[in-house]
Image 1 (tube, each protein chain N blue to C red):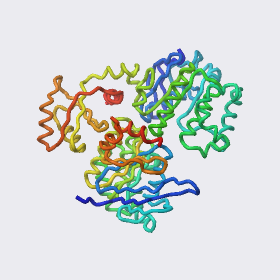
Image 2: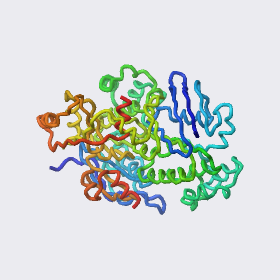
Image 3: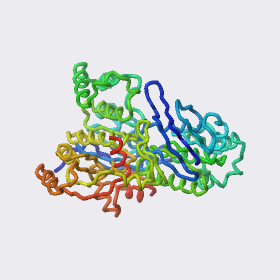
Image 4: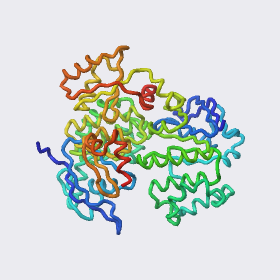
Length: 242
Length: 300
C-alpha cells in the first residue's frame, strides 16, 4: 500500500552564515496523515516550516510540497496549501464574514464559490450569531476554529498549523482536534506543531527536532516503546536537550 | 497572608473580566491561577500590581491596600508580565542594571537571589535583549523582576509558548525561589503545571471555579472516569458521541476519557457497542482524573 506522498523532503538544509538552523532533514508525509512536528524552542521547527510553505529558500537539499518544488515553484506551493498560526490567523478588525470573503478572494475563489463556502461554514460551525461580529471581539477558541476553516477554504491538499491551540481552553482545544481528525479523515494532510504533549499523541506520526536535525520520527506508540517512556512528554524530555 | 483578594469585579465596556473573585495566598506559598486565554488572569494581575483599579471589592498585597497604598506595593513586589516587557535595545546587563537602579539597589546587593538564573544568560550579557532566544528572554525577565528582592512575585503566563523541557526548567527555578521565602502567584494555561503549585485556583470567564491543593481538586471529580482506546481515534470519538449513555468523552493523549450517565457502568455493553460499530483493538480501563478533567467538568 503505497500512499500518495504530499510532502517529500530530502536532506533539506538552511544555513544563516555559519549557523546551521536546519541540518539535512529527510522525511515524507502521506495523504490524509496527521503529522506532528515537534521540537524545543530554537530547534529549527519554524525555519523548516518556512521552507516548506515557500517563504524561505533552502540552502541545500530538495523538497516537494503538494507536488511542487520549494526552489522553483514556491508561488504554486502558497496557492495549494493552507496555513494558520497562533500569532496570525484572521484580521481582528474585519467581521467573520468579511474575513471569509477576503481570504476566499486571496485564494482565488469565485464570488459564487465564496458565497457557497460562507454559507457552508456558518452552518457547520454554528456561526449565525457571530458572523457579523468583528473577529477581535471573539474568544480565542472561536477565532482558532474559524481560522482553521478559513485555511481550508480553497480545499488544499495540505494544511500547516503552527501552534494552533496555544492558550485555548481545554474543551475548545479538543473540539479543535476533532475538526483536525475530521479534516484528515476527508483526505487532507495535516502538518502541525504544538507544545501540548497530549496533542502529540493524537498524531499518526511525530518527528522531534533537536538542534536542527530530526532525532526521532515514528508513531507515538513506537516512539514510546523505543525510548521506554509512558507518555510523549517523557519521550520529549529524554530527547529534546540532545 | 501575603495576598488577600475580596469580591473583586472588573468590567471593560461589554465584557465582565472578573466576577466577584475572592481568594488568599499565604506567605511563602506558590499559588497557581489556572485558566485559558480570556479567563481574567491578566486583569487580576494588573489589579494586584496596582496598574488597574477594580470596579468593586478590595485587595491587599503584603498588608498594603492596592488603591490607597499602591506605592508601598510597587516597592515590595516583582512583576513578570505575560508579554515580554524588557527594553529590546538595551543589553542583557543594561536591562538588569536599569531595573536595579529604578528600585534603588544594585546588581551586587541582591546577586545571590538571581545568581542561579542569571548565570545562564551571563555569557550573553552584552547582547541586546531583542536578540535573545525566547528561553533567554524569560530568564532575563525573571532576573529583572527579582533584582530588588521582592516579597511577592507575580508571574503572568511565564511559560506560554515555551516547550516542555524549558517549562520544566522554569518551574525548577520557581521551586528554588520559593525556598528563599518568596511568595508567588503564577498563572498558566497549561493544566499539567497545576500539580507543581501548593494550591491552585481554576478560573474561567472571570469566575473562580475551584480553589484547593492540586490533590484535593482532583479528589472532587464527581464521576468514575475510564480510559478508552481503539484502532481509529476519529471513529471512536464519533461513536462515543452517539452512544446513549455517554456523559462526556474527550480525547486525552492516546486515550479518550469517558464518563457514563449511569451510576453502574456496563463495561461489556460499551465494548459490544463499539465492536458492532467496526472498531478494533478496543481497550477500556478505569483511570484517575487529572486537573484538566476537573476543569472541563466544572467549565461545561
